[in-house]
Image (cartoon, rainbow, N blue to C red; front, side, top):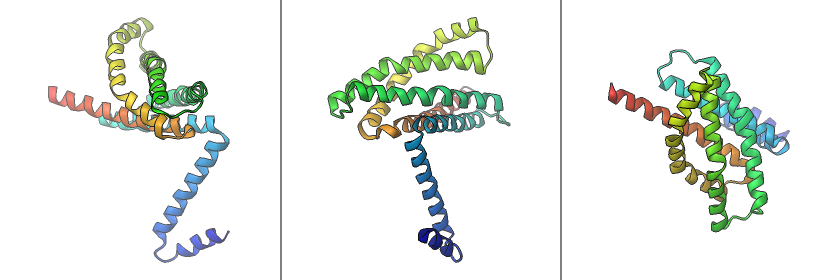
Length: 204
């Protein structure tokens, strides 16, 4: 109560910045509490929100005047229903298999296992989901496109995500790993759209 009163008194004169910092701090504390009490739900919501941010920026970079709400919702749904839960249980299983060890050899095994199992599965599933559900293309057409696109997508993933995986397993606490992965995925999606737009402008 004393802290709350102090924050209230400080807001009168030149205390705007302090009040804002206090609000951000309280919001962060509340988020950490939710993460501790409801880890799966919090990770699902976080993954969905970050997927929404990534797609919103991607749409704007692609030249959309208005945000395609259906596409945005479906991308958020994928993050919420798959990205969050999958990552939550994946990291729990990996920690169980390797008994929470963090030596260099164990981290390397974790990253390798992740890259040969979850990475191919996630990329394959997303390509089918995006083509069939988001773009509403016929399954036969989607299958043909996935066969063409999948090898290059997976090779690109293997050049970038092992580094992220190493940082995640080495330095990030278990409860934050899905959130860290979702945040990097958000930034990665924006970067890919920037690169694609730059290439299209060069060709034009």
